[in-house]
Image 1 (cartoon, helix red, strand yellow):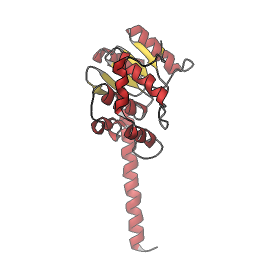
Image 2 (cartoon, helix red, strand yellow; image 1 turned 180 degrees about the vertical axis):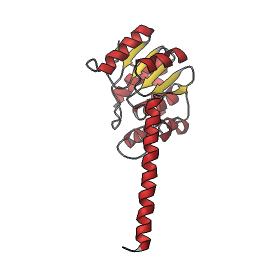
Image 3 (cartoon, helix red, strand yellow; image 1 turned 90 degrees about the vertical axis):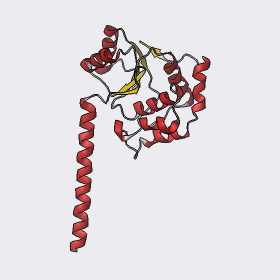
Image 4 (tube, helix red, strand yellow; image 1 turned 135 degrees about the horizontal axis):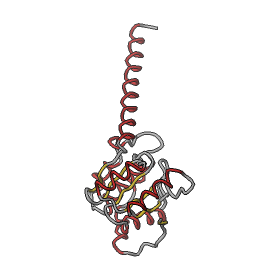
Amino acid sequence: MTFRRKSFLRAVAGTLGVLAILFAARVWYLEEQGNFHAITAGEAYRSAQLDRDELTHYARKYRIRSIINLRGHRPKEAWYCEETATARELGIRHFDFGGIGATRAPSPRQMRELLELFAMAPRPVLLYCQAGADRSGLAAALWKTTIDGTPASKARRQLSLRYGHMPVGPTTVLDDFFDHWNPAEGRAVESGILPSAHKEL
């Protein structure tokens, strides 16, 4: 192997090593602070899965009145039982929505369900998924366009590395969905014609 080739391989290995360290540091940071961010201050927030203490802290600090759980109805899971119990203790309304996957975009029916939740959930509302990166990112981008009237080009920033969303790999199905979704469909929220199809605890 030539000296030039060895140098090139060392440079590539070094670059990949730095990227791996940065990615690991980012994941650690997001998990430590719950990946909590404002979508629209005073109206909507997004986060990763929060434990009892984290949820209590953010709920009291930002006066959260409702939660939209993007992980779906999971009554047999310990985290779900803890979360719903905490929500009851804090007087927070809790809604389940399982229509988005980290690598699966919602169907038209599921989109109607989500938009209905957006319209009727008491503010401020917290949207969350497991990591707060992919499902939460798409939901936040949809909130910005349908509720805030933000241009899609700006709303799309909710799906970015800042929140832990990777613009490569299987999760790009969510980017593609948002890029091809027609924001005008969200106007149905204001008309009040969407069917009730959500679960509430």
